[in-house]
Amino acid sequence: MKNQELFPDGFLFGGALAGNQYEGAFDRDGKGLSIVDVEPAGPKRENMLAHPKQYLEPRSDLYYPSHQAIDFYSHYKEDIKMFAEMHFSALRLSIAWTRIFPNGDDAEPNEAGLAYYDRVLDELEAHNIEPVLTISHYETPLALVKTYGGWKNRKLIDFYLRFAETIFKRYGTRVKYWMSFNEINCILDNPFIAGAIVLDDETNPLQTIYQASHYELVASALATKKLHELVPGAKMGCMLAFSPYYPATSSPDDQLAALQQNRTALFYGDVHVRGRYPAYMQRFFEENRVQLERTEEDKHILRDYPVDYIAFSYYKSFVVSADHPGHVASGMFDSVDNPYVQKSAWGWPVDPKGLRYALNVLYDRYQKPLFIVENGLGAKDQVEPDGTIHDDYRISYLNDHLIQAAEAIKDGVELIGYTSWAPIDLVSAGSGEMEKRYGFIHVDRGNAGSGTLVRRKKKSFDWYRRVIDSKGATLKADLTQRTV
Ligand code: BG6
Image (cartoon, rainbow, N blue to C red; front, top):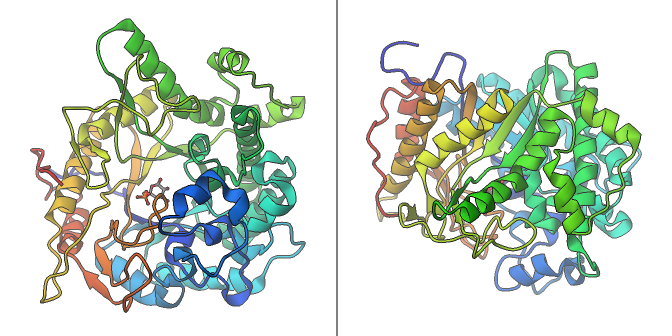
């Protein structure tokens, strides 16, 4: 690294996306419905996610943002060209399972879907952008929920593997970095989004959630095995949502509460990396009456096929107090206010140093290469009458987080890349909104589907290109974050 450069040669620098949030074309070229395609935007969304059973058929009175999204499906050349203008060396994207297996359990893949991703990969290759692929990003085929109950059912492992093997064979020579499940631990808080699970009738939801998690963990290990067999040199990562919990005070009870909360995410990393269930889960399972169906063969599979690297998303940190431990599954989104950090317009704590902390925690624990595959600021943007967008708040957020990522590298952490969420405005996974914007590229589309889909560069567009070109030398070392 030259003087002033903060990121090494070969560092994967770019952006991250998920098919269901930007592709649109939800029923084109043989694509089937995924769970996202029945998640409405607007006032019914929360109810749908809490009680999905009543919403599994698309309804004409609801608006589904994934159906058109930002229509990357038709705009992919234009969009990839803009990513190339920012000099991305990597783009993380997902393969929509339902483009390849419309119902999830089909015997043969859908050639039109495979051919679409050939074209996308061609375009990336033409611009020297390395694809980083997520196999499953919150877009399980809806038919697998209706017929099999989603990841509650062990059969999902086979369907997932058929999908994984198909795309390894088709794209393996062109893709080195893969991820098995996006934010696998989010199944704790969003069982429908992350696990395609309908919980309505459960007497003990944790039992169902951890059983489904187990099947996903076995599927992930088997996909790792298959990837290594089919594509020597390819790397499989797990992907965690990692929002570290700080203890609210120095009270030993708060320390223990933070330890427990952090384990809700780390459990998934522990199994993926160490290949076995950590000892602390035994007590948790006993106390929560969770009895998993785990075969001897499962144990061997987990042991024999650990991941090669750890990918994670980082947006925020939380604070936990023993008096307010959060809800029983994980507490991921219930926490005590932190007076030392600011908040985004959506109330997400903004804590750049938490990223350095997270990187160190994960590296201390696993000693595996780390990859920040999501980090960014969801904000309201204002388009000025002349079409410009001055998103200085986004620049500040990213500047400060990248500085902290560089600090972690100096701490000795092996960090292989950073893909910002998301390089272009897209549909929010959490809220279904378009106006929660993350991009360097603005897309003219509103929450209810209005707009021309015209793309515009924001101020952050050139800023990010300069950061990439200079390998971080243009970043401001002092924290610049202001109220957002
Ligand atoms: C991550 C997801 O949780 O956070 C993405 O992997 C998501 O799919 C991103 O879009 C930001 O969250 P949201 O709710 O603002 O879209």
